[in-house]
Image (cartoon, helix red, strand yellow):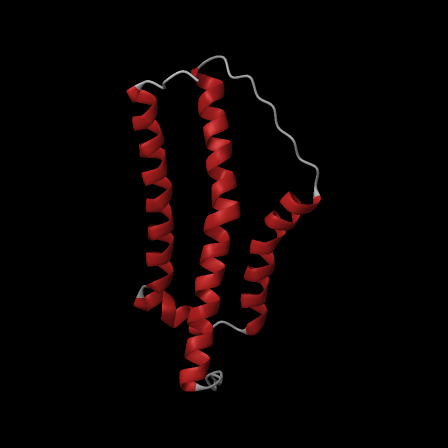
Length: 121
């Protein structure tokens, strides 16, 4: 097996750091105090919709016989496929991560303070 050039290893390391940074940014966005306050006020239906929306891409991956073969010749198709891969990462990793964190925040708030009553008008 041939050795990969150093530039390829740097590109892979950069991609891994980018994906890790996206996961950290998603967690930070959900766990900020202002977002936590908003999530704790969500009705069960909205939270359930988020969880179902996060599960649908995984159901598609699990149930659909998807097979991709790509021959990339040029920088344009390479960038397009990288964009598709980033979109797949968002749907398959970041959306479920956000949904899981929202469920955890919502459940902790419910256990700590009990169910919230809507404000009277």
